[in-house]
Length: 428
Image (cartoon, rainbow, N blue to C red; front, side, top):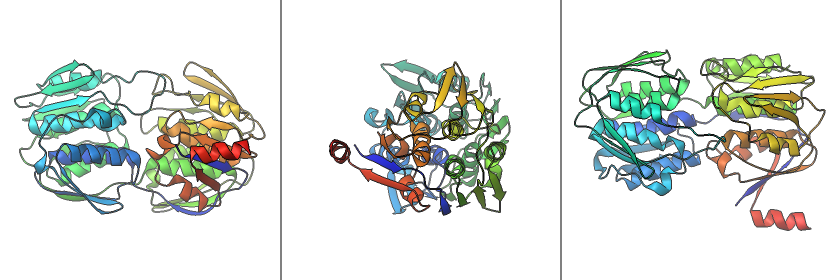
């Protein structure tokens, strides 16, 4: 398996362009199943999760055609099965969106329990199941598979016990062709929820309130094909913002929606970075030393949980003591032991991490535990003294398009090597 060798110590400088949003793409691509025509989707990120979800649709019989590296056409009219291949679904969390899409259009779905990143705790789909049942579906879990059936979904009011992006997406997919009106209360408000609603509405759906905590879906019988461009990736943009601040660089980050980045911008400014906003770009620079700040992750519009590890890596070299509190997942600190190998002083107590800033990090072999943790380790490698070896980079490439190439264009020194080459170099 490939590894990254990162030589740290160089401030990032220049311009970088952000790709389409991973979290929007992996919801919008399954949503194309609901169409009765061909969907052309643009600004798709070329990442592993997107490749997997496209392979799943292809194996189900859908027509999937790449127009270019970032544009595809999906023809769902040739889908011949509601059973989703196990070997692919176990690799990606978003595979559970196929339940809502297939149930909504065909009244049947048979999907393996999803995979994806392991944060050290269980991420159940109980709310999804209760939501489907509220719309009239019969759902069973048998041998690690979720089997949902319905003779016709009927709109209903569904209150989510906890704010959940996945449940909100799945209920929107299931409800869009149901009879009557569905009201989703305590819904997630993330930008990719709004993007999904806009995509569905461009096909003829009637969805209102996306971006608020009450989403109303009036079911329709027919959805047309459409052409749609995915929003820029909020988390990729935030990752480059943090990497720039961590290295003391100066970078113009293009193809962004600054409003989506407000919570990240605020905390970077608290930590001593200078952030300038433009129409579709944002400039980050950091002239002095980073200073302590406290971060608590919350559902949107709060600070995103997917930026927590990257911020922790940056704060590990900030002056003073910072406190990071995880307010979304029960446990998202598996990466801390890897940062500690590089000299970071981080103590975890439940959902809280106390970070004592150090003057510098030192290179060490580290292993990626999940997607965003991988980004954090890359940031740590960019500021560390020496050459950091980052193993199991597949998880990083699930959500970041050519991240090594983009960072190198800003002056970073990142080499991709095979595991065998890395071991040989280490021995020499």
